[in-house]
Length: 220
Image (cartoon, rainbow, N blue to C red; front, side, top):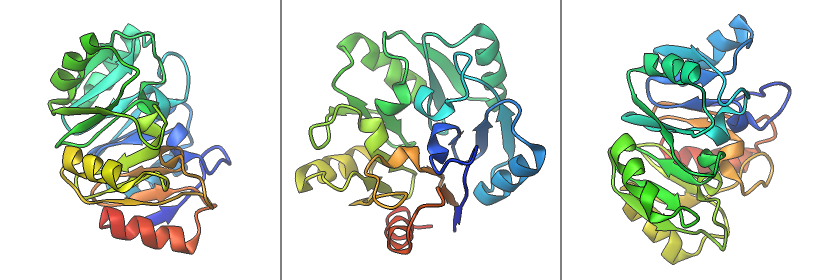
């Protein structure tokens, strides 16, 4: 099931939240009543209140599947200790890039990694997320994490991705992948949706046709 919801009066829900099949990460200070609603929507067992590198921009600053979580090198020791309550393998990615959630995406079958990264971090990504990786750009963009949203059931992809790119994404993640938009036409999908294999939360500007595309692609 898909639910429309705004966070901090913004339809860009993916900037502030990150979820896998069991856990939802939410910024410190988020209202209890709203937190409870989001937990119900995504049908997760655990809520973790946290900041990442002192910010509430959890989505762009994290990469997470059901095996592990990558954080930027600027994440604090305290934040890492909080996030290890998830039971996941939580590690910093030793890279100059901090918005790593915009550059990497993963499910439990594979990960797609921006070609901005040099080879020395590739093994760290494999080790923490415990999946093989595919290095690529999509439709000329290097910010692959902002252009694809995946679960273990399906994936949605930037609408300008070509057939070859969609095939590569589907093979890397071992799911079917389909083009879609979010929030009334935005191609930067991860900014407007939080999804796991059970459910999804999308920004309030998401249209009926977009909901149909997302429901079909993610099989929720």
